[in-house]
Amino acid sequence: MLERVGVVAVVVLLAWGVLGRPGRARGLALAASLGLTVVLLAGDVWHQAQVQAIVDRPPVAVALAALAGVVVVLATATALRRPEVVPVAAVAVLPFRVPLTLGGETANLLVPLYLVIAAGGLARVVRDLRSGDGAPAPPRPTVWLERLLFGFVVLYALQATYSGDLSKAVQNVAFFYVPFGVLFALLVETRWTRGLLRTWLGVLVGLALLFCAVAFLQEATHHVFLNDKLKESNAYNPYFRANSLFFDPNILGRFLVVVLLLVAPIAAWATDRRRIVPAVAVLVVVWLGLLTTLSQSSFGALLMGLAVLAGARWTGRRLAVAGGVVIGVLAVLVLVFPGLVGLHLDRSSSIRKATSGRSDLVSGAATLFADRPLTGWGSGAFSVEYRRERHDTNGNDVAASHTIPLTVAVEQGVVGLAVYVALLVAAFQLLLRGARTALARLAIGAAFAALVVHTLGYAAFLEDPMTWALLALGVALARRRERGREELTRAEMAGAPAA
Image 1 (cartoon, rainbow, N blue to C red):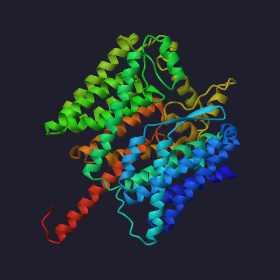
Image 2: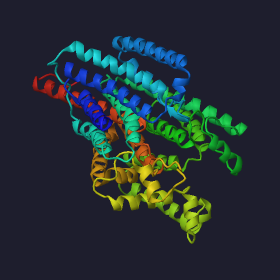
Image 3: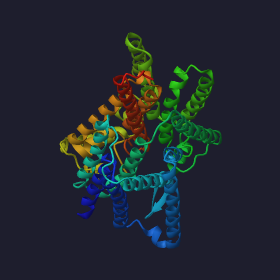
Image 4: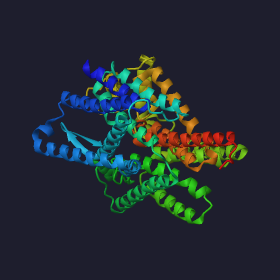
C-alpha cells in the first residue's frame, strides 16, 4: 500500500517542482520528489530481492556510491556557477548506458545522464531556496503542452495503483519519468542562445560520427558488442546488423535518425557554403551508419521526418504528388513483389515472420484492450497480462507491444489514450506552428515526428530522454519567440523603432 501511495506522491511532487511558481515551495517539492524516488526505487529493489550483488560486495557498492556522491556535489557546484554547462553535459552523455547486474538480471541504465540530471536538479533546488517566495514567474505561453506532459505522468502513477505489475510501473517512474521530467525543466529554463544551440547540435553530431565509426568497424569485422542475442542472430542470418555502442541496432538507428533530421535543414536551406558542405558530409556519413543497423522502424521514422521537412519546403500540388508517388511505390513493392519484404500475403505465418512476431503482440493487445477498454489493466501491466491472456507458463519476457499506442491502450485504456493523443496534438501544434520560417524549430519538429513514428515499431516514447529533450527545446524556443513579440509590442507602444 505504501508503495502505491509513494509512486503517486513522487510524480505529484515532480509536477509541482517543475510547473510551480519559482520559490522555496517549488524547490522543496522538487527536492522531495528526487529523494522519494530514491527511497521508492530502493524499496522496490529490496522487495524484488535484487540486492544480492550489493550484499555480496558491500565495499565495492559503498565505494561506487561515495564516488557518485562526490561527482554530483562537484557537478552541482559547477551548475550553480555556470548553468549553461548542464544542457551541454546532458546531451554529451545522453546515449550512454551502463550495464548493471542486480539479482541476476542485467539492466542497461543511463547512469552518466542520471548524474548530470541529479547535479542540475540540485542546483535548481538551491537556486529556488535562495530566491525565496514571491519571485516573479516566467511567461508560460506553452503551458498546455507542459500540463499535458506531466498530466500524463500523473495519470500513469494513478493507474499504477491497480496494476498487476506495480514493480514495473515504479521502475518506469524512477528510471524514466522523474529524472527525464527534471531534465525537461532544466532544458526549458536554459537561456538558449544561437551559440549554445550550435554547441548542442555539434555535440550530437560528434556523437553520431563516433557511433558510425564504431558501426563501420563492426561491419568490417562482423563483430558486435554488448548484445549476445544480436551476436547469435548475425551468426545465423545472411545479413549483418551493427549496434555500435548501443545495446540494440534499433536504438542506434533512432539516435542517428534524430541527428540526420536536425542537420538536414542546414544542408537544404543554408546559404553559406561553409555550412552546407560540412552538413552534407555529415548526412552522408550518418546515412551510411544508419544502413548498418537495418532498422526498419528507423527507416520509417526517417521517412516521416523528411516528409515534415518537405511539407515546409513544398506546398500544395507538388507535395501531394510527391507523397502519392512514395505511397504508390511502397504499395507496388508489397502487393506485386511481397517477397522483397519477406511477406507472402497468402500465408499468415509469413506475416508473423515479416513482423518479427509482433503481429501476435498486436492481436494479444487488442484482446486485452477489448476486455477492459475504459481504464486499462494498470500502468506497467502489459507483460503480465499478455502472458496471462496467452496462457504463457514459460515466463517468456514480453516487455511491451512494441507499439506505444497499443501499450497505452492496454495499460491505461481510453482515458490514457485520450491524454496521449492530446499530448501529441499539443506537441505538434507547438513545434510546427510557424516552423517554416524558423530553421531550428522545423528541425526539432521533424525529429520529434520521427521519434513518434519510431515508437510505433519499437516503443519507448517517454522512456527515451531524447523525447523530453526535443519537447523542452521546442518549449524554450517558443517562449523565446513569445518574449521577442512582447518586447516588440512594448517598443511599438513606447514609440521606439522595432529592432
